Amino acid sequence: MDKLKKGIEEMQNHNYEQAARLFTEAIDENPKEPVGYINFGNLLTHMNDYERAERFFNRAIELDEEAATAYYGLGNVYYEQEKYTKAQEQFIHAIQNGLDEADVHFMLGMTFIHQEYVKLALPYLLRAAELAPEDVDIQFQYGLCLAQNGQIDQAQQVMERVLQLENKHSDAYYNLGVVSLHKENPHEALKHFEKALEIQPDHMLAAHAKGQVEQALNE
Image (cartoon, rainbow, N blue to C red):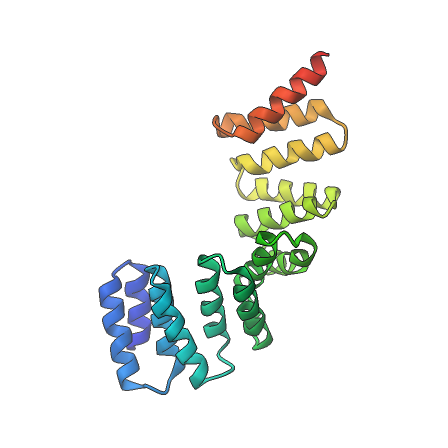
């Protein structure tokens, strides 16, 4: 097994020192090969060493301006530091250079969400949802974004899909409750809020919504 593969394995097993040693050796042996720098950048990002991670990703890009995963890694570095505009630029570069995977579309969508550009987020979260139909987080964020864009029926369908994937997803139940209120069905909403609280008793939003619906029904 080559050093990069072994290093990735060590990183996945949280043996960061071993991974760092293997990546360093790989870079020393092939200093003009960007992949070593990209892997080391990913490792440093895992370790929250963003300053050094940024340097490694930039070095990879110097060696290969079309290294899509280097742009993606750099985007993650900025995203973790809440520099969403800078992250966005890098994720777009990654996609332009041929990275068409769920994660990069999802992360790009989330940079827009954090900046409250929900309309701009929607096509990227849709693409991520298409590429990763079994990913609960991606499906949930896509459903949420649909709701924020006023596409209530589609949001309902996606939240129901989330519950098929994970039947104890309290936030999906809460959001189905909100959808039911939009459709002026308070009894249905109450059931969803109760279900959310059954799964997560400290769900503040569900508890508040449940109280308001019960009060309205009793009046």
